[in-house]
Image (tube, rainbow, N blue to C red; front, side, top):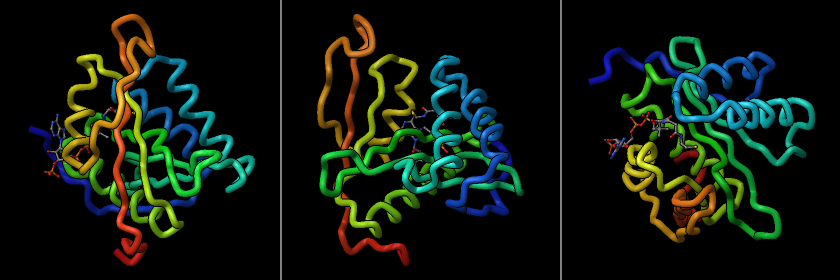
Length: 173
Ligand SMILES: CC(C)(COP(=O)(O)OP(=O)(O)OC[C@H]1O[C@@H](n2cnc3c(N)ncnc32)[C@H](O)[C@@H]1OP(=O)(O)O)[C@@H](O)C(=O)NCCC(=O)NCCS
């Protein structure tokens, strides 16, 4: 069982220069991602810092005890009216299983709904490594929408999850 507390907890959407290292540290700590995937996660932070909202990347950070412990990155999907992609969600390895992932995903959904979003999509792999991740998405109300066979590699399918948001589910909760 995980030990410790995620509190005091601060949720913020402002992205800081120091988040470049924080995201690298969080993503690496999970042990889930290839170095090239970590590089992409970091690039999205840099893109947001350099281009602001025009980057199309929105972030929610959770600072636990003053230290970034998890985050999400999401954005409106081009050519859709109100569909959003959750590009990344990661919680530092030593902070997992304490409810932080749910707080982050629900806060992201609140903000997406407040911006007029109606649907959220998440993609993941069907590899056994991602069994806990898929369990987490189902637990958070996501439904499996599609499977793209052998998408990542032979035997490694892409699984797409979706969730409809309540349009009245605004930022006030
Ligand atoms: C997936 C991840 C973001 C979840 O964050 P977390 O803080 O560990 O999850 P939480 O503690 O908030 O759990 C939220 C809910 O999911 C459930 N859950 C977590 N793991 C689960 C599993 N393996 N099977 C079923 N349910 C699970 C919890 O029981 C909890 O349910 P509840 O709120 O109804 O009690 C985190 O574990 C992580 O970063 N994993 C590695 C990286 C990753 O897979 N990222 C996503 C791919 S981009």
